[in-house]
Structures are given as C-alpha cells and as structure tokens.
Image (cartoon, rainbow, N blue to C red; front, side, top):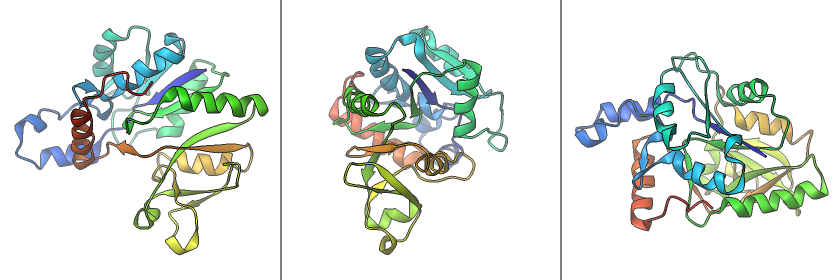
Length: 250
C-alpha cells in the first residue's frame, strides 16, 4: 500500500483570521502551511508520518504541496528523509489544482497502481482513532473483493447536515448513495463525509465511485478539520490537554 497526503491548500481562511487578531504568538504562524502548524507541540503532519511508518514501507509515503510552501516541507522532512514531497507547480489559491487533481498528479508521476490510502493534510482525529484498526478492516474487505474501498465517516448533528455529504448505507456498511448537503428531513442517515467544495471535490469523486465500485464506511468518533483559527485552537488545546504522544494514531 502507498500513502498520499494532500497538503497543497493555501489556507486562505486561516490566514485571514491570523491577520485580524492582536496575538503576536499566533500572528507568527502566518506563512506556515496548515499541515505544519504546531499541534500539541508537534507539526500536524508528523502525527500521520509517525503512524504511517509503522504500518507501511516508509519510502511509500508521498506528500503533495504547492510552490509557495514547498521549501517549508523540504525543511520539515529533514526529520523524515524517506518521505517524498511533490510540488504541484501552483503558486496562488486561485490557480490551485484541487485535491483530486493533486492525487492524480502523484499517481501518474510515480505510476502508482497499488492500494493507496489518501489523507487530508489538515485533518486529525480524536485520540480513540487507530490507523492499524482501519487497515485491518480494509484488509477484510479486500480479501472478499479486491475492488473494495473504505472511507472514514462520523455521526453529525441535524444542524451540521447541510454542510456535508451524507452517506446513505445498507446493513453491511456499504455506501449506496451520497446526498450533497441535504436537509435533515431528506435523509435518515447522519454519517458525514467531508464538506463539499467545487474546486477540491473529493465528495464528488466519492459520489462517482460508489456507483462503480463497492465503497464501505468506517465510523470514527470525530475529527478536527483545521480550516480556520477557531478549529486550530480547538485542535491544539485538545492535544495539549490529552498530552498525546506523537504516535497516538497508531
């Protein structure tokens, strides 16, 4: 299995938040890509690398970023020389490729035809998440059908439904349909996928995939999507309070 971490976003919402505050310590984060923000004392992406290298060959980990942040990732990877960092060639948010195009870039450039785990570089999960458990579940599905796919999902509230793609599933946890930002009355499911965005569109890809391949969900208790200052502070506080070790995802 290969691993691709998508970290080519420009963090425009986060940057705007930092520019509008008076806290100098936080202002010093301006220019730091979201994947390298300090969370509980460690760069966010380091949690993923520490977990991945225990279950995969370290050389099979790829990170895709952009021209603006490429040098920062190259500096960070001195602690992880086995990781391959790819520059997507873009230098502005308006010209960004988007998540799925970045994934395609890595797959084509390195001719990846193995099973691949795809991770959002600005995302962390609650401490009860363990990567090894997810991979064990995928192995069970794969042994039964080598075309199977597995996505992570968590229960959202009625108020949150309108912000997410909602996974409708059968009794075997197979996804049969995805409703894009439905009203609460339009679906009985509360299994949330990532927020949908026209440019990045991983939710649209998933909608396409479920009509062609078996796709199952693995339920987690929750996640931190570090998209703005508020979610960053919540995530950092959570890991500071829990005093998690760097290998918590294992």
